[in-house]
Length: 469
Image 1: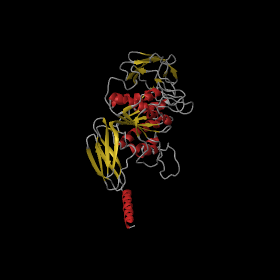
Image 2: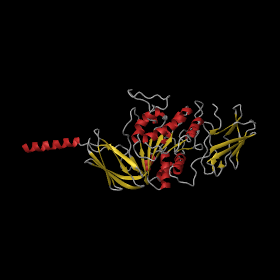
Image 3: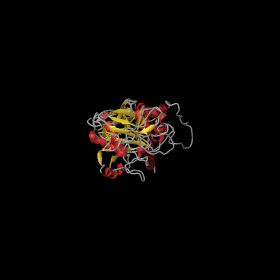
Image 4: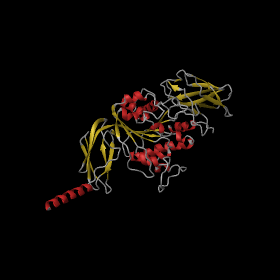
């Protein structure tokens, strides 16, 4: 009887001691199959028993790093990552060992926005992604890894989110962002290094929820939410998606960010012209990366009907934003819109045009175009208007289509369809009804099929030379 009592006490004390020893707990962004940014001091953090010594060992160099968990159990260590390679292992211990396996070192990018970024490779119901079946079937790639952040909202900044790193296999790719996948596939193919793709997007959302409280305070027309409110609240509430879906990522080492959003803000183009650069500066500040590359997709043409403003004004705001801050760029989809579907099937163009920007401007690759034609100068000679363009060194083309989307106006501000033709210098146009032209617009409507390209096949954005309301 006495022996049984001793055994019981021993087992009880052992179980009690184990309950006091907290296991290493990592945020969801750290896990098997993950990609760490190469050639940097990458932060790894988590929780352990308060006051415990935490040791992190990296297999690529057999280095060990130690720190002590705080009174709240939180700890953070920075590890030096090598040039791209892997797979490797990371061991983390506070007396109990946790091992991360199949870890790659390479290039990590974050993707965000609304439904056109969220749209998976398999498409939405009755809304396909062009070429997706073959792309999915051939997608197995040991050097691409995928992470999708589950949709969540919060009035307060969160420390963690929900999701897991997945290998690049057809079943996983089918459910992953099509734009992000096509981007990553081309970047990985060109650079020949592992690529990690983190998709954190939510369909139908405005830009304000994706900006932090620190960033949103810069805009006096935006009302901050009441953090003490009870009950449910909209995902359109300012800051709530940043708090839940971006803030937990901001310590994670990344190369840059990609963005595809704007449809839900189309009726406030003037404010979007400020919010878009504001979001970029906000994310750079939150990540502590002043030169973090940020590339985005201009919304595609779509027939929004008779209600609201012309969405070309939102596209104009996005075009302007591409010149306001360094280390940014815009991918144009003037040729990829669909009149009756706000989710264009051509996600390959969206992803690959973003990739051209990153490859040229971030990775210094050359020999290919990364932007469509951008208006450089307008000159007027009598009733003739002449336009020249940047990013068209080898000239312009329509690939056999007629130039039908140019319009000219005089002082009376009435626009007429122009006769336009490509010249060695650019484009010359006129309209018989406008003897004294003062303004030109190209494709400045909700829905158009853009026909102007450079010879490398990248389209020109819609644009105008006036500032009339």
